[in-house]
Image (cartoon, rainbow, N blue to C red; front, side, top):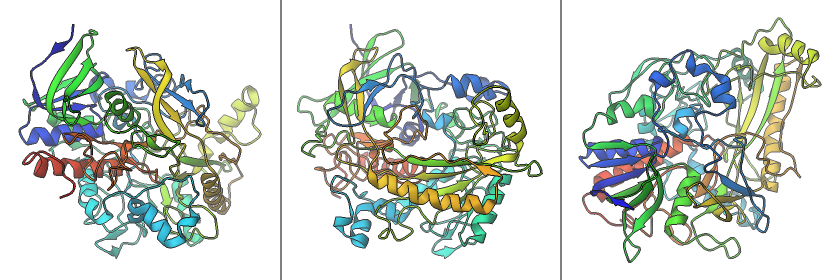
Length: 592
């Protein structure tokens, strides 16, 4: 028997970064807000108190913070017409679970988009011509400029206490920062974290080659910080346990360390964990959301009526819930029509492990998920002339390490056996004398890369799994070859004793056994035209005006930077629009 509860002003689906921000902003306006999270509630204390927090076997290998794939997962195939199979081991990307979502176990690498990233199709067509783009490439512009978004990007940085060195404040270039970034209204909240030895050597080599290295912007505070909600963060101690872990010293920004301590005290906010939303309910004409249906911890089906619905779960679940709820036209790769599921993308990386003589101590265990690394941005976005190279997009190149954890971050020189006495000797001899150089690059959207509902496989609740259709394309192979070659030139300048190279090459298929990032994007994309996008510039559904959808599902393609900074900026932009305009006059916010 289904239970129907009393209506509330707003229901929020998913309590990660976006859901926490929206819950806080709406509760501050006096709305009665209920947040539904399918996972458990975990917090710094008692869950990540030291030394429990640095258990690499529990968190790094066994993935204690992630979704149980035996209960719910996705299916993956390379092309339309292939048979998709379930994703059974957490390798290529990590599906979050629990309050805090991916914001709980992320690295903290906190970038803003370049101005050209937001008008990416227009920029490339104007500079290189429409024929420069492959016929099956489906990149689109955001319906927002960098200048419009900047105050909200800044607001998210203030929330996180982000550390870094500004490169452009109100049009004035600042030495030591990123000369390619868009103008900032002010600098970072806290100074940049100190460099690791590997980052220092990378920066010296890059500078000698004429590049402009700068510290990696990090949502890992370098000093104590109190944000706009009155929540205080502490300074990072460079322990090297960030990605896949909760932070035990309140230094890494997450919902638990920036929002929830203030939000959970509000009497007009309620958090319900172990609440798995199965559908967004609609009025009889399909033009208004009436609330949601979810299954609680006891297996009881519950209807929560609400005047406003915020869909703020992880990217793939946002797409799946839109499809399950019948909101928007599903994307059809054969005709190119429809919007829900369109433009799935990932990211492409390469990596070189560097090994020095024993007189060079790099101490890789001194690191952070972000910070303690140096970056060059000369080959990212549209910061260089692509015409001679035959591709669009690019990536940044970074040097340094996020940590030296023995199970997942142990480097051994090329030619070392995979096990045995020789492996042990190599590990012992090189551990304190190695570092890494990586490239972190964009992936464009294509007509055949999308998400729909799998016709065969279902989750533990009997609902279809999301099916991902995705593979690499020639544009990305050429791009990563070019950016990796530039990285290897810096590696050579650093003069290691030896080094390795890992890179995707033509003929390689998308491989679910190889982790790169958890940066999957698209499927409920934003834009100016309801025929080609699912949500408007404020993340409001074109079809259901009292539904707002936030997260990386909004990205029309994936840029070279890590996505969280842009997600935060778009979320605050949407939150302000709801608070300042929608609540005063509910209805479509576009056109103005």
